Length: 509
Image (tube, rainbow, N blue to C red; front, side):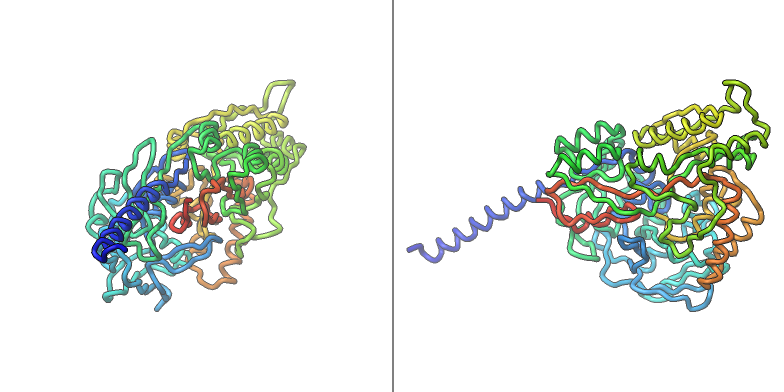
């Protein structure tokens, strides 16, 4: 028989041992994933590339969220209502805290969004809030935003990570800024090799994440990412290996699970219309007619995409049908080039263009397939591959003729204004082709301020008709999103916009 005091001592010893084992086991719940490029900004107000926004979603909380299908859901704002057509009142949740334990309040929301009102602000996302006139705290849990004019897309644009007021009033957030957000994780370190996160113990939207850490390795080379995945060095890779490799993994690796679903992205071929040749609409439409999109979808993307005729996906209520969009017709392409004055004699090409893309293997194969299609109608195309940082800089600064990119994660047709309005020419927005058409500008402004659904749909039907006729882009396809996940990971959910929100809830065994 064990004396009572000795029994208690053994219980304490056993508890200590179990606690120690638990700590050791928790250290093994680190989830490792790979991105092809490092995030370009750690400041949510400056996050415009996909990886920066995915990271923003893990580190910060926003006034509104999006569910796995891309539908708006409450976030830090538990509810909201338009009290007038230009006045939005938002009611904040209680007991939401930053990583340092401080409660998130109206002053933090006000400071975050007032940054967009500063005349010297260089935040790229400022373009979405140029209609914002003021933001004020009107009670302990209420924020009121006043606009210059009605803005139908305004609520969807509120998905910006809220910063503590002290940091929102300071300089741009970098890896050296000791800011803790109100998202499920907090930043430990970030450099060109990896970004490391740990759980936010004060996360207020659910229990703290069970993962001990999330390590996002920056692995630029696709073959290296693939090798690390099959070697067990990575637990998750999303949208960044070729479809051929994906097929092999699904067939031969039972220890890995492949997820895929229709996505919200739109891949496109862009035209820099400051180039005299590409300023000619006939040339742009000829190029569109020359590309066999269905063949590329079938053989390069393994059928994991839907043919695109507009910037908006087919699932959107604003998607227009019956548009005059160039279909695959090489005969028509040659005829249009003749009409544009680019006739062909013998083997000499009608014209020569450059096409810039990233070092991603799938993007390279797509570029070469498009170049082959263009060659068949007499257009010589020089494909140039660049690492992501230089590629993005060249696109943003207009050092391109043709380029391939995707719009990712947008939820509202106001994306047309950001992509094609004259007011959105860089550095003020995403009109990287420098396209300008005043009648389109007028429609885009009307679409932004119209709040009645039927009237707004009518406006965007006309927008899509004009863009289809003018062809400032060739809309290529809407790719599926996919992920390869280790069987050691449970609870992972694939979001249509590619966000990694489910990492807050996954477990690693």
